[in-house]
Length: 280
Ligand SMILES: [Zn+2]
Image 1 (cartoon, rainbow, N blue to C red):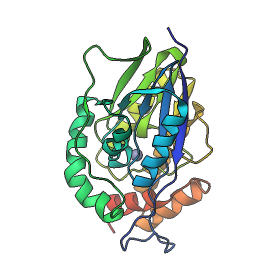
Image 2 (cartoon, helix red, strand yellow):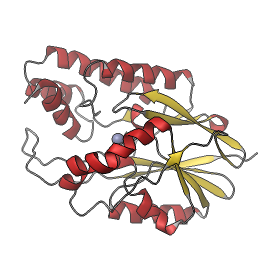
Image 3 (spheres, helix red, strand yellow):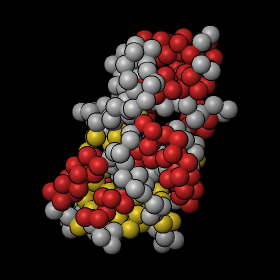
């Protein structure tokens, strides 16, 4: 058995093309993205992958600098900003497998065609490499790194459908994907019609693991991995639910959330959520 470790790489958000603007007049920006490298003595596992050429270059160097062999990549959920660049990245690491659960794979299959055409190519023209559905289902025997188990935790809907976290019992680490955020505004656009309640249940499931470290899929640069971000993510959703119910307009919701969370990074998802859930 090996003592595992982990480190994270937080990639800055990318400005989006197009005419969409925040109420302040600023352009939309994608959320900062967290990648996690779990390392043993010789091997490493990457959790989630970059999506732009620039991020891919940084990630490739980061993995190479670790000095470890990349054993496989695990994708926590289907949103393109967590995996569309994995095929391009793996040109530098041939024969490295990419795993996801069946429900995540189903979401990835639509994301790579419809999601890409609707969102990623218009928003980031020329920045996202060609991608195919390279991931395969997690093998029946499960996942391990140098004899230590890595367990996919099925979470269902969080900020999208078919999401998971990766639990590493030996070091009490949860790589939470988008179930947990940290210091960054949460994407609630896909959480109408009971989705917020399902997301809250997923948060309970993560809390029940009693993790010592919780890596948020989107966190403010410099933010740590303290388990207190579980409760903070829950409170944000409860506040969002109240604010959505009370809002007379998208702008009401937007203003309420920015007033309540003045130090959170990236207001773009607040505005997408406002327009999508309250009409605009
Ligand atoms: Zn995300």
